[in-house]
Image (cartoon, rainbow over all chains, first blue to last red; front, side, top):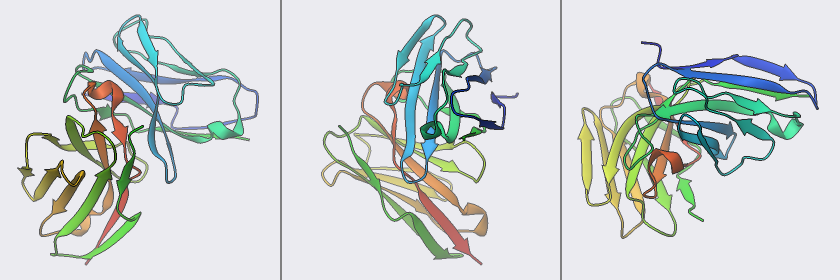
Length: 114
Length: 113
């Protein structure tokens, strides 16, 4: 059972470049989300989805796009990378987004924007 | 907005002792409070969940308490081992489920042999 799989593990971008962080889960979870983790700031929610075709913004959505065409996949797109987007990104899923749902996390993508 | 503070960025404990980590929050009490463990270079892993009407929850050597009057949760690891060394995160569920979990910044725990 793979759980939540994120690719790539590491990425270096130049300012202005675009890229897509991939996330896939094989647990048939309805809920998926993207977080970024910065030193001293904890995990901050970027975007989330409660099912295929449904997405919504989290706390820090600017500069990022998402889509959810299948239950399994939830890619995160950086439209025009900025140094402020240097961070570690985590994808997470849950059986449902409702009360008491625990999150299953991927192993993260370390992104550096120069 | 809800603010979460986890005590000290780092905590060093002697092996065999009880480690106690604190999670304080402001404003409204969450419906649920969760604790996660994160190892370097890995994603967080769920450990325990406690509901607002529960005072205490246990799982093996782990114990979580939830005091809505003090607006605080305590996370205890008894008989600590070097393998318990990791960063521990608390997360508040304000009643909207996993879609709106708010995380603390984490406490890095080191258990010294």
